[in-house]
Image (cartoon, rainbow, N blue to C red; front, side, top):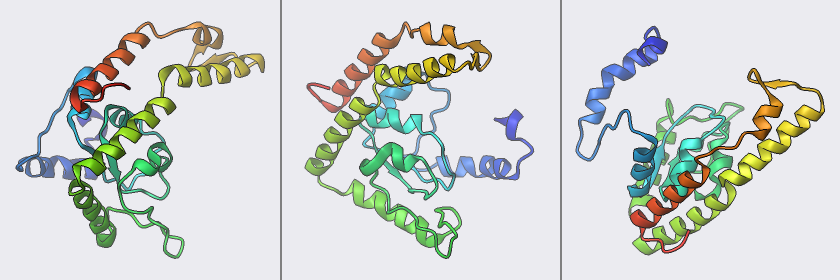
Length: 206
């Protein structure tokens, strides 16, 4: 990050504020985690918080969080694809509808920021039964929607169509090779995620 963003003002401000933000009760900075450690962290978390004003185009970290049982609480950025990714399981505030054609962001709008904070407090003070019901439904739905096999099949269809239409390469690799390739760790990863979610959340069957 230093090499990529050292000249950016926002990065310098973030680095300056980081020690103060992380030196608080209940806040733990966990850099450099492995994929398994990230999965275990999500599995042990009740919620996954993401206040952002960026128009995110993908949210694989939130998909993993949902699969492992961490309920998302985002700021529901109006132009973000996160809203489609997490759907109704997001316990954040309603999507920030533009006022006069200008989107309302959590950063830079005190009212929007307060709505997000209130959403976090509301979620954290729900009954255990209600939270468990939301989590169980979320894990089941996200595992059904974001299974590696299904997503790989969807990409395979797209690659084969592109190959048939004469688009010879993708990212410099012949499409024929991409289509035939199969992730050798697919089953191991899937079983690991299931076992971790069962262990951390006491779910009998996923």
